Image (cartoon, rainbow, N blue to C red; front, top):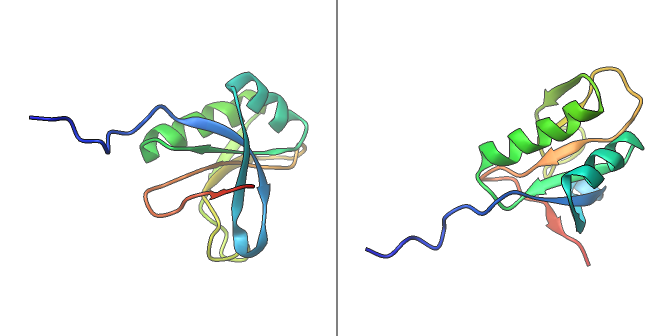
Length: 110
């Protein structure tokens, strides 16, 4: 029996920007160390392309490397395309470690 082509990949990390209606737009792919550095300076990152649990766990690991953090559901006030994320309990730094789920995906940037 052939393996399914829908087997999840290893999570990938991207620099991210926030767009309209809560969209998270993924930029250039980065490694975990650069993601932690980006978060420490207040930037956003997004974890994509894997099973939701793997995406969530990697986002948590990155945000935890910055400091004590909390998981947040997508903010309705941000818009209908918002993603779940981790953020610092007591900022600074500002910013988020977003992650994709089955039904919520980051937009691909230019």
